[in-house]
Length: 582
Ligand SMILES: Nc1ncnc2c1ncn2[C@@H]1O[C@H](COP(=O)(O)OP(=O)(O)OP(=O)(O)O)[C@@H](O)[C@H]1O
Image 1: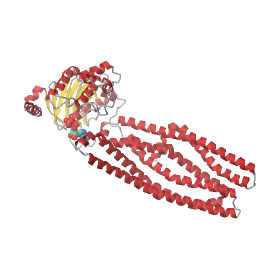
Image 2 (image 1 turned 120 degrees about the vertical axis):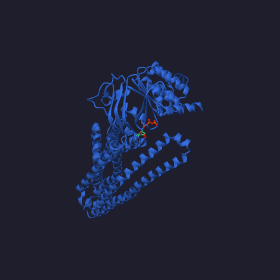
Image 3 (image 1 turned 90 degrees about the vertical axis):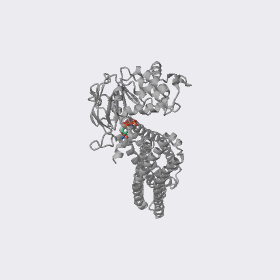
Image 4 (image 1 turned 30 degrees about the horizontal axis):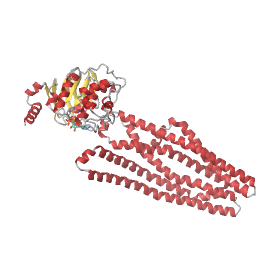
């Protein structure tokens, strides 16, 4: 019920159209109720009394109201669709906006396929109910009640006798409603899983092919497809059982009406015209009840789909900005201070589990270049993710220029930190648009400058359409190193006081890396820069190197300081030297 009430709220902006559509439906129903009565008059006053004039008048009236009904239905159909589309529009808009606000911890767990299925199939199911099912139910109830009222008024005994099986029909509907709801819930869930499998397979198709796992993936998909098939067949079985039974009960209404009606006509207790009108009215009883089966289907589908959409809408945004505190970011210069910081991911227990980061105390002055080294999984990416508030610290404080990062205006804070992430994602757009992603108003000159600094300008110029070349969703058509350089140009163009390079040159050959570092020397001037890298060549120009081990800073100092100590840094240095001399 709550779901229904919540859905109804989405009708509020279109309430005028809802009323308009409802009025037209009432008009259409009244026509349906009056038409059999006119037919009765054709028989009783026209044919019965041999009155040609009456025949013409009533048949013309019949034709007239049918035309009126057709016109009404035309406008009703359009307004109904408009109402449905408005709801879909609003729901999609809200869901998308919320997805944009949700933080990293949500996406760490979310399945893209499920989200896509909610955004499309589930919202579509809601539309089917709002834009069609609900109105059809309203018409059904109106027609059913109106028909019975008209029939009772015209001949109550035959009406009551013909309706003897209606309670059975209603009971069948009640049972169907109870069973089909959960069945639809399963169908929607299965659809989400099927979409997830599809999405994962397509995104990972290169891995699938590289490991020659097409057949296994095919079977995995077939299993999901078969589950989907079975779930749908389970649901269809419920329909197959219920609908013929409902048709049967409906048919009995018709038979009893014909039987008792004929007897009453034969005994002069009912006019022949009324009998003919009852033939027509009987559809007004059977049709809404039979249609109710389908409408329940649509309703239940929507009742199971809507909570899947609401679940996303109701997910709290754990990294939000406290308006009252929001400090302007204009002043950010890049003095970063971690003060006894610990960090746990959402699925960790901060009380009893070691954090991914523990006891991090680090004071970085504006313009300093800090290299962050450490074994894989030691917490390097997590450390820098905290600065942009992709996640919030669990303990301790993290300040930039003396202000807690939580107190900054969030969007502004993120604009001040240029990140070249470990995994490069480029949009299916032109190279120009990709580089200017954070600064859409950038001039061509600025874009070329940034591309030059990232050592990618001459490559872009050599492409068939230069900066207008469209690159794929994942930058397909560019090599890993080229993608990284586009991402580097994207970060440089933002002109951020804090620059983060997370393995930003890992896919680049040593010569290009060295050229990038030459250019970066100038770029890094005056900016606080964090370089996460495995190659020592990438960190040799760092003012300070910190080494992380299982979330703790275990070594800290200049290149020379660390070389003088036993530990991770010297081991790494020796290993790389040995590898180079082999
Ligand atoms: N979303 C997550 N939820 C839970 N644990 C995570 C999540 N992301 C990373 N971790 C864990 O946190 C630890 C630190 O990960 P992080 O990515 O910061 O390491 P890293 O030093 O950057 O590693 P790499 O050099 O491989 O990129 C790892 O043990 C990892 O398994």
